[in-house]
Length: 331
Ligand code: DGY
Image (cartoon, rainbow, N blue to C red; front, side, top):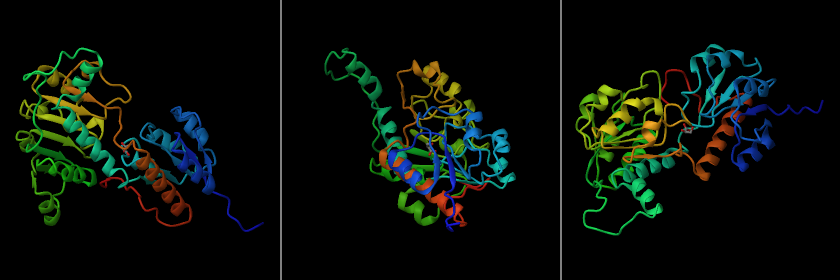
């Protein structure tokens, strides 16, 4: 006996940035996924055999059946990402398995991408890029490819947590009027700093907005929050941006309205059945489609990895992990 505790065993489902994997190998007996191929439930369970912690990502469905089948050794699910809609939190709580996530470190990157989409749609950037690259540009003309102005317009933010507020701060730079709907109203100081107007009633807010940005987590309560009925409340010139989760919008209903022109445009980074994107959306010129890039910066992904490591380290050292997620609480 040398008195040293064995390193915690950690099963990681996807390839992580090299500095994160290196640090994990120093601190843990890390079982890495060298190929980065998405793992099946059976291969996740095999990787968890004798493990102390599982590190999944948004591409893994950690549903109730999988949680129930996890070996008893697994005491922590340390998610690489802030959204935890792919993890059955109640099933984990029932087995007394702690769940953590990575809040805060991807706020700015996700807000930046939100603004990129918010600009790209009304200024027809995707359409213009396809045209220029396709050699079909016939030259400047006074009426060529006119879009809609962003500056000074009304932006309705659904979900005014960290990311929603970061979007609001950026949008103020474009002199946009900030409106928001959230389960709880912001404190007076934050609301005043953002010059934000609170709408308790989402339906009412939608009817008055030029732009809508979805920034809330996907939960059973927010699934299809923007359904056909609510989409029909938007003014026809409205543009929707979603960098949160695909399931918050009824994608088929949105595609129908974009095709009919009753919703002017959409900038989407997330989809209901990722990595699948519906044919109906792909054929539309008034949509800018991004492949879930919200947090995809090298700085952000390393910071997310550092959060995962800090959560595992503090948990396996016997302390409360900094980013514990409780069922039913905001994330
Ligand atoms: C997140 O962290 O939730 C991002 O969407 C990537 O999973």
